[in-house]
Each structure stands twice: as structure tokens, then as C-alpha cells.
Image (cartoon, rainbow, N blue to C red; front, side):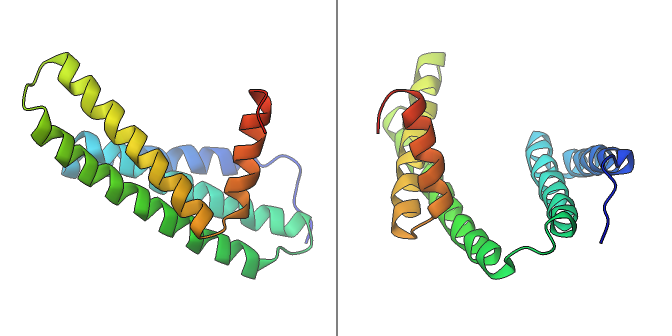
Length: 143
């Protein structure tokens, strides 16, 4: 299958999908709808790009991509649960509502969530995560 080098419609469709999802979901969910709409549009864009890449590469190892997707989704769910419960816990420990307390809550929940993601990624043996982490650490001079 021949795929043209320049497909302007793909970019326009991706931006329109993002716009439509954001407008529809922000009306229903408020600001959370923006995050969900952007995530859905990004998934749509990734699917379109995978389909186009498949045409250029004469196929993609679908089983490997599917397995990675399931593992990454599971690790993301572990991270989401850790973020949710750590935020609930730290909120009960810091009942004040000033800016400093909010910074502590966000910092603790992000730290717990990232720690949970690293543990889950290693437990699920997500090769892509390991590769990305080693590239980041190499960039900062660590191995």
C-alpha cells in the first residue's frame, strides 16, 4: 500500500477530533472533560498514525503492539489508583486549604503515582518503559 508523504487531511482531522471531543466533554464534565477529550483525540491520532505506518512498513507486529498496549494500560491503571488513594490520604493528613497544603498534596500524589508506575512497569516487564527510562537517565549522566 502506497501512503503519500504529505497528508494534510490527517492533521486537520486530528485537530478537529480534539476540538469536537473537548467541546462535547467540557460541557458534560467541566475542566475534566478537556483532559479526557484530549486523551481520546490523542488515542484517535495514534491509531491513525499506526495505520499509516503499517502501510509504510509493510505491516506491524500486531501481537507485540497489542501486548504492549495491554501492559501499559494496566500500569497506567495502577498509577491512577495510587494517585487517587494517595491524594485522598494526604488530603486527610493536611486538612488546611492554603497554597502550601495544596502543593504538598500534589507533590506527594505525583511522587506516589510515579513510583507506582515504575514498579508496575517493571513488574509487567514493559520493555518500552525500560528503554525510555534508560534514555532519560543516560541524558542525565546515570545508567
